[in-house]
Amino acid sequence: MELRHLQYFLMVAREGTISGAAHALHLSQPSLSRQMQDLEHELGVRLFDRGSRHIELTAAGMRLRRRAEEIVDLVGRTETEIRVSNETLAGEVRIGSGETPAMELVSGVIAELQRTYPLLRFALHSGNAQDVRERLDNGLIDFGVFIGNVDLSRYESLVLPARDRWGVFMRRDDPLAARSVLTPNDLAELPLILSAQADRELASWLRRDLADLDVVATYNLLYNAAALARAGVGYVVSLEGIVETSLATGLVFRPLKPAITAQVAIAWKRYQAFSPAAEAFQQKILELWG
Image 1 (tube, rainbow, N blue to C red):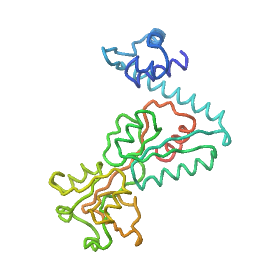
Image 2: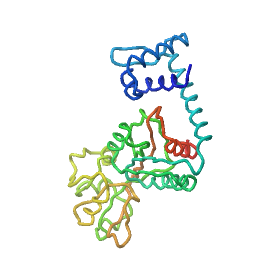
Image 3: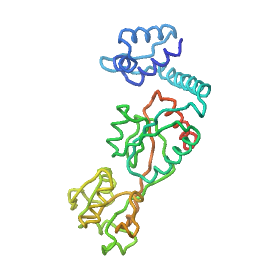
Image 4: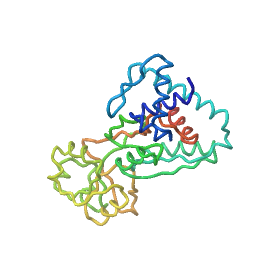
């Protein structure tokens, strides 16, 4: 059994089809299918249940996947440790994220890695959960940072030691700015500016359908929504700490009561073959939060 056979096997397990794995590996489908049959013959067990459209792992296949992941990971880490020094580790780590103060934690990791590996570069993309997930699925980013109730069961993920708090941005001279918190009754009749990701949490908190609210605008990133709040268009429901609320901004933030908080997680594709740069980032976040 060769290492490449285990890598091919893991790709088939990840893609769920021989054709999808062959495309990802730049192999012909017959060649990959033959190599998987040879692996089964060598081990003396059936690794796959082959359906008409999808391949499922057998019990033996699932056991091999666990071992293969360990072996491939160990080999990769060993090669990286031997070949890479502080002066030679280079490349780009691509991270997508929704707007969240928890990016301060990720920024701390980036700063530490760049001090250790000066040639590392990082590319950050901001977007909502759907945008980040699509980029992650399409291989356009290595890691995605997600806020709130996002289904991450398809990915490997870590929950960050941070929770974001929901509230409302409004003009500093608004009468509601005199309050320390805002309740469902306070928002019931107000012109609201909502983000798509707030829908489920806010509907549950208000105990009413969002269609019954006066939603005057929606947004996916907060910078422009804050401009609407300053202009008096409406009240922006958002996470705390994303835009400034100093005197010069003309805005204040007031949290919701009962409080709504959202967990923050960082995720990556299962069985991802990382570049050395992305692997260094993954190792650091696993060391800190794994």
